[in-house]
Length: 226
Image (cartoon, rainbow, N blue to C red):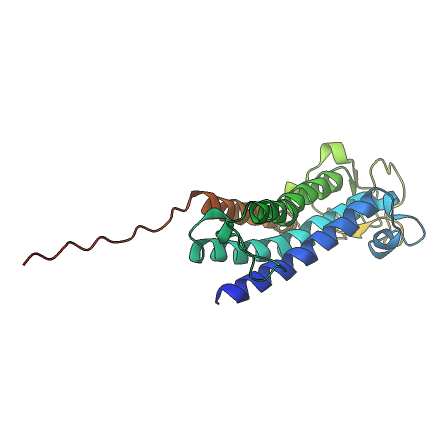
């Protein structure tokens, strides 16, 4: 892929990630009912099932952020002699990144496309971890304080394991009223912790490539003597 391809990939994957996270965070703050209806509690607001919103918000946005960070890393390693030119130029084609205002613009792009997704993913993960877990159609209940999605409880009676709102208590655990189904036990830590870790690691490598890469040295040709 050339420079334009990597820039296009980073731009649109980052936009998709930021928009998805913005919608998720708004829902977590009680500003929208859409994701709450989509992820389980059809008769209530998103705030009633924040852990479910945070669970899928963290997984989906981490996948988008990982793909965007790979494109960013490749661009930073292959193109640009200075830090400001190693950051892909989005929207402002032909921007002279050596100008002061252009450098400020590039830093703002990093804040929006790197720092904000990282903060949003952490917020989603924190919300998901607060939720209770239950086994569908049983009385096997686990509070958020005694469980972790790094190794979620397994099904004792081979039914679905469901993530629901915090402090649900002894509320019946059924598909229509108890949050969303968790991925199988081994897939949950991979998706919920593995994807964010991979995305954060690649993004960190990309930032280091932007900051630490030095301008290539120009080989010195010895003067010919006659």
